[in-house]
Image 1 (cartoon, rainbow, N blue to C red):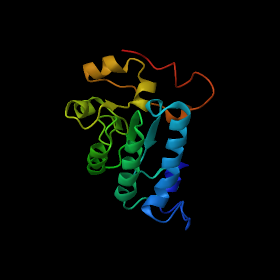
Image 2 (tube, rainbow, N blue to C red):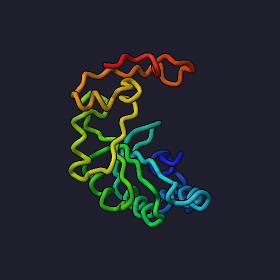
Image 3 (cartoon, rainbow, N blue to C red):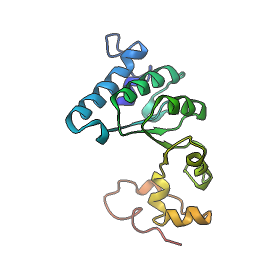
Length: 175
């Protein structure tokens, strides 16, 4: 829902919750502020996917609203920002704006569609503090060993996600 408020094609509001950069970012900022007030900013994080077309969202220019939002989130002192990368240029801009822990799900994976060992250098060069390996970790329960070895990787089976049993979660082979 937060992403839908940020995207101009899904947030068609003309009141203080839409329209302008500030209006489209307002919902996300207020959610983060409310959660921070309830449990503490150091226990609160936000995941953003600027420029990614999830659930039909379209952001032809995600930088202005994303930059404004990240500045406001940084002011709240959140524990982390988790970014699903749309473009490296935008990642670099947002990294400079957020001073907490910056977690990145990079857009340049080694395994098509998944974060791989070629992205480990993004921590070393300061692009991110941490990397996320969601789907690849599901399919590779021994992912740290596989990353050290450079693979091979099991391919995640998206058809088994949220299936209600262990298929696709605990039945992938290890090295």
